[in-house]
Image (cartoon, rainbow, N blue to C red; front, side, top):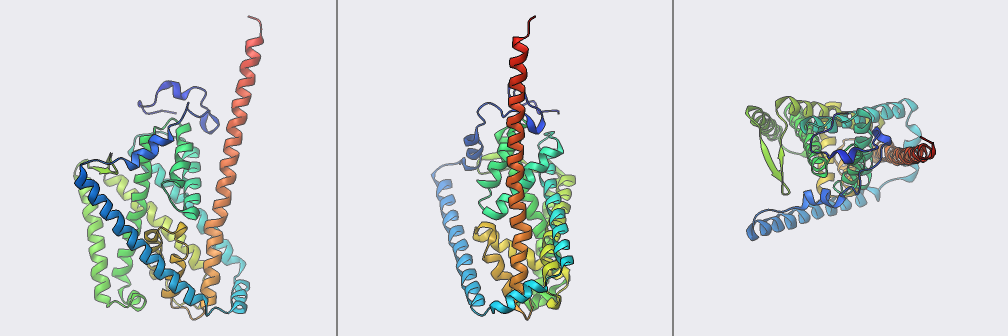
Length: 369
């Protein structure tokens, strides 16, 4: 494995892929500090505090509204009809949902792959896949991506000799990938399904189309901006080079595949009477995800469900709720449990490899010259 020159040789002693030893005293604190470092004087700090307060109020407002809508909706749910909706879900729907979940998480591994290319770090795909899958599976369920996904990434990538600053940059680039795809899907949906979406958001079709054109124009402008020359940005106090045209295009493609597959999981589980095409549904799904992220609720729970229950034009609320619950189980809970199993297996293998190496050295030391 080729390692960037910033990695000290002594950190690589005894490393054997995923089973290698952890570097001596991996500095998790410095990794987290990469995100929290602040520059500028008092004015800069004051602006950051004001922005934080406004963002917190906005998030609380979204969460409060979602809770109100969810409680109001659940109050009219018939438990018997909800149970019947679960029973009506066919095996082929569940199999399709499982397959699309696998496709979504496979695309998510590409997020880390693109980021590693941008950072010029060479890491085996097995390591990238483990770090990506486990970090996203845990983050999607628990929320707080800086603490959950970031810590998991640090634990795994530090074994491969990646520095804390590089891991922090990787996390930021992966986050940008997700948002690029969200903007693209929302823009295309608003432009080409303006009339259908207007029945859901109650905006005039031409307003939806104008919003979509503006969003797509902004995305194209960003693509041109990063293509003409190397672009640098400063995020939370550290400097980061943005991906160029090829990698940004790859980011958009990967994110679209991921989000469409994730939307397909829920779409496959919906009752047959939903009456909404997948193109429109994908835009609605992305909008609900964006609200869930903005609320800072773990996994967008409550906010996502309230949005889908309110927007989807399906007569049976019980059918939608049953689909949402199964979606949580298939797309969130199963990967979450599998992620912890993989982390435990990886740690067990690493410990066993360390023990076997120590036994081998002890035996070789006792052998006569």
